[in-house]
Image 1: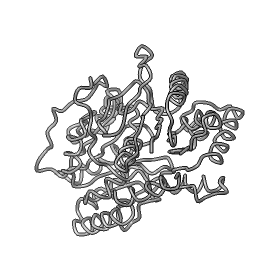
Image 2: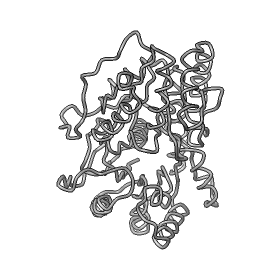
Image 3: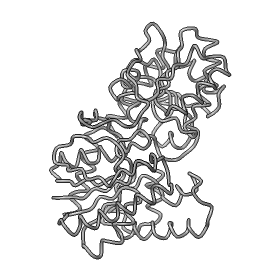
Image 4: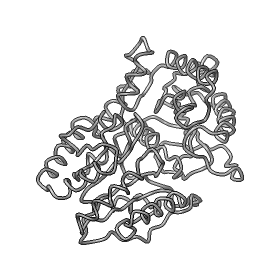
Length: 391
């Protein structure tokens, strides 16, 4: 089989790294699918056997693509649509795998080129318009809602990534057998092309993992909804009660790191918090693997963060906020669940650092849960079943 995969994202740019699309593509290639991968010009190339990368122009003077809807994305998506049309004219594909808003383009072109269509749905696009404050226009939001619903009813298969989105889609579909819940639960090392110029900035490899300290580690982006402000405020109490505790925050832009460094200073804990900025994947994993406790302080949202699955599989105790984004996967059996406010998070962090037997038990339960429900074997089986349904 041959597929066209379309991801309107800066593929492997720190501002919008679609790890989930990378792993989807990797596993499909392993299952024998020949893939043309169409994406934005921004980002780094990766090595996947059987995958040919096609990029639209970079348009570097327009700046970097940010997370969420934006005028720049609308501009770039016009070129994605043109390139997609050209590729469909030039090549015969067994199916098109469309990520996020690329499904709209595929929906328009499907009757013309008569391909089978897989919608890789990571969020509800009308909800994104409001979540990222892109628009308050009811007309525009309702238009996107009707278009999204039409796409869902037309596609040959749809992938959702968490129970909340799965239930939402099932409330729209009449043919639920074409709907697959495939969580973003695998995290193999990413094979970046060594020859690719790195123009992403703010990446450093000069940090060493501290020794003889109890490390509380957060790794990920530093967007506001991820609760980094809660984590830093909570650590003031943790630092006062545990002299060995050190907070490591991996990730973030230069501006975000500066902002949260100032917050740490206001809380008087600059000497107990280390901000690494963006790191190469292998070095970020060093910090994660050296942690006494991992933390996910997210304060808002419904989609399960990809990092939760890696945290489950790590064998390291996890403290996470007791919000629906987390509790779709996490329970008190596998993690220390706390309210998304500083004092309760501090209590959870201190308890996880001091109660070693309970922490060990939860970490063991978490690893067992991952192996039973979210492992690479489970992931591959689900995706293989979807591909077989397209024959």
